[in-house]
Image (cartoon, rainbow, N blue to C red):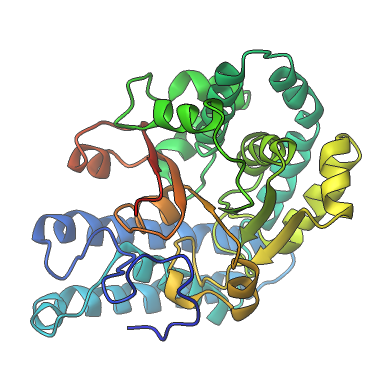
Length: 364
């Protein structure tokens, strides 16, 4: 159990467990996910080598060391599931993903997806002005917010950690936000609280004081999905905190990358420019070691910034599905993700590209 630094958002500290699955006790999940992670580690090893081999002749050797160390540690986890279950130890997807990032850094690969992220950010930023014009052209309030939520979900398709999506992107260079909007599940969604969220916004509900948005991927995800969503909250009068990883993990956006993205977006959007100048739109590091979200390990600086948060938005498979799917919080919460893993989608009762849209109002 991690030591609590902040409990402002969690409903019950004693019951909070970020992990949706426990591979120590769930034999079916273990049978699927351990081989899945073996394949993932091999893919990460290739990505790591390719990211540095052009200017570092040790890249291949270090990638092999990463591969061997990670596979060996994964096997240790697999062999200890029964013992750990008896000792009430949880093993979630979060811990295995963090293990990959730890070993990548250990062997000198701090950011294997750096070039990919740069190119995707540049391409998405070229479309940002067009996207916000599309949103602003929707006069009906509920329709506009529906498009904003769908935009976040479609943006979340752009995840290089999901093989199903990687195959699409590699085979279709024209795949973008609108193509992703067509690819995700049509309503009714697997978990569909969209109407409740729209009712909350359109029935004269009180404007949220502060929204904390835990963001996910670079490129289309953050630029064309999250930022138009955050912009609309700013227009309502809500202060927005964008929470991103301090260190790289897969193609997740980091705080430094997000700062650069906002600099560019401010040139195209007066709302974002004003909000940044007035500090109504700020960025905070989430302190995580991988692509998931454990509220027990938030940095103190972020904890302090969250004191007035009355809307929590958690986006992506790592943060809203592998972790926190069933966690309860002390404020209104919106969890948004596309399920890009067939096994997990079927476990939840859906299929690949099913949609998670959970709106959880604050209950007394």
